[in-house]
Length: 443
Ligand SMILES: *Cc1c(COP(=O)(O)O)cnc(C)c1O
Image 1 (tube, rainbow, N blue to C red):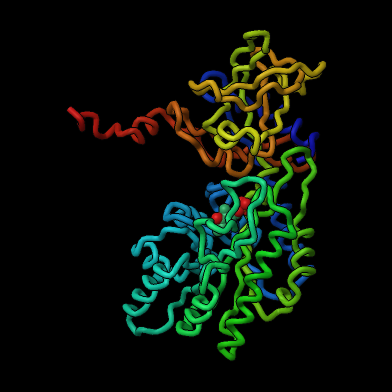
Image 2 (image 1 turned 90 degrees about the vertical axis):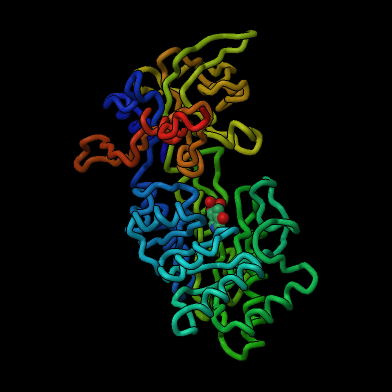
């Protein structure tokens, strides 16, 4: 989102009353054209390096909103799901089963059965899950091969990035089969040879804080494993490689970097053979597809000064920016300041805290941040929050999930138009979620 476009959208949001006084002091906005352009750039990036079929399955957890999934679906993307809820969202968005991939690390027998019934792709996490799937397949009517493409998730154990909690490819990561563990590689090869229905390998080695070369090293490991299995099988048993997602996002400026094309080129260079057409490919990008196309807007309810520090008390805190609040060093967000009319606030930078509404001291969107001095009634925008922020609500203090609007420029210079993607949560919903149907349960 360019700064101009952002300013335009924020002014329109204020003028059109989206931040409506008492009821909606915080809203989230998504740039529809930006999301479309991101999806197009992903498609193009891979089309430029391969003729192989590529399914780009959006990692639903990055933005679990039906409207977003449908928008991405209309751009030809699929969905990577990791829970029954995410699968339900993908289905509600009309994503066809052959574009859905189930990857969760802890799937119940019921979930696996449902996945087989639907025919969606499944990546098993470990040996126990392989056994479980095998038992289910054995129970299929004709006892043969399921329609679902079946894969195994492996961990190349290439090491951590800069954010421990998001590093999926460490030696002891909880995900998949650790390929460098003793005898693990042999076990994987044998498991495939014994089970012709296993046709895919999956890895997700990337994440925020990981260099592209390290991500590519993880993909190379999986590619080499596929080659080894296929050589041992004497045929192309592994026909599809699911290379995961994890392209890092630049949260420091408006620049979109690295780009999907950068990563595709690194893969092309580091993993010769990956793109030569023998393997179908699946990607699972999340954050990089939506982060920079979303933002949270919040009113400054009060502006005060404590211990010499100016503090803007806003309505956006841990409920919409959980990672930032609990791990501010790893997840700083950019804040932009606007006045009561939605115009960019100007003036010298003043070191101030941008606080949220939750009742704990650490509920800060930004601490000691230099910005034009915020005043009561101003609007702050938390930028680049289109993935894993307002879509990953945290229910602390029973704060409501804010409304989400998509925006687009109206044809013929008609200004900015908003469409509702998600209603703000109502008080009835808050009460219902909190056991409102069972008030006497503990009497
Ligand atoms: C979270 C996740 C992704 C997406 O990661 P991003 O960093 O959002 O691109 C893809 N695949 C799997 C298996 C994941 O768990």
